[in-house]
Each structure stands twice: as C-alpha cells, then as structure tokens.
Length: 96
Figure (cartoon, rainbow, N blue to C red):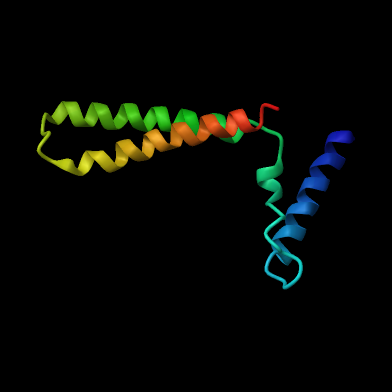
C-alpha cells in the first residue's frame, strides 16, 4: 500500500511538472524534474552498462577492421566513454 501511494505521488508530481513547467511564474529554474529528483541509482547503472557495452562493441569493430586511417571511430567511442562518466556521476549523486 505504501509503495502504491509513493508511486502515485511520483506520478502526480511528474504530471504537474510536465503540465506547468512553461507557465510564467511557475517554472523559475529552481524546480527540477521529479525523474531527476528520484533517489534511485538504476539510471546510472543503465548508463554505465550501456556505455561499457558500446565501448567494447566499437573497440571490437575498430580492431577487427584494422583501418586506423578512418577517423569515424572517435565519436562513438567518446560517446560511450561519456555515458560511463555520466552514469558514474549519477550513481555517486544518488548515493547520499
């Protein structure tokens, strides 16, 4: 019962945020999305896992072709690294 009320509360606050965030006088920059306020680490873990998967995938693709003259591999590897960094920061932010 408590979990249902808590989930309903999060849903109501998210709907309120979504409906009123662009109204003058309501969204003043101090309110953040309830999705970002949630005290869960699942999003961080998903970012880290997907970043590691993408990093491994792109490195395997890069070294299987042995074509280092093509510089198109830099952007996907940087994106995967960024996913890992942001995921770790998100986990650390929600650990307190």
